Length: 138
Image (tube, rainbow, N blue to C red; front, side, top):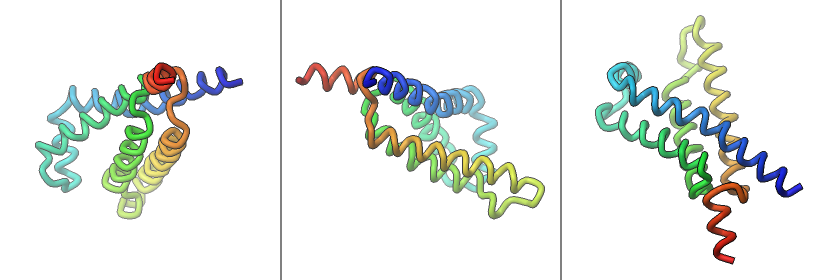
């Protein structure tokens, strides 16, 4: 049963990383468009912020895939996801014709945050760098 749980943990990490890694890579490949979007949101220091967001999404996604520093990474990504949801999907301020999609995206991100918090509490399992390090420390 423990092996099954570790496989599920790996699949869960891969599924969550599938949200962050492609998003970061897309931002990297389209920096100009992302800069325009961030500017339209009224964000400060867009020229710096865009690179911080790309780093969080790409490195965080890779860390989840590898199961590296999972507790720390999952908490960091949870905080990032809540902040990104508030800034990027403010359904309460969206026009009526866009409010439903914004609300859907906002609460999808809240669900992802829940998954990240569960991952932060449970750890990466044995199929991970964290697991291999823990096993070799015994």
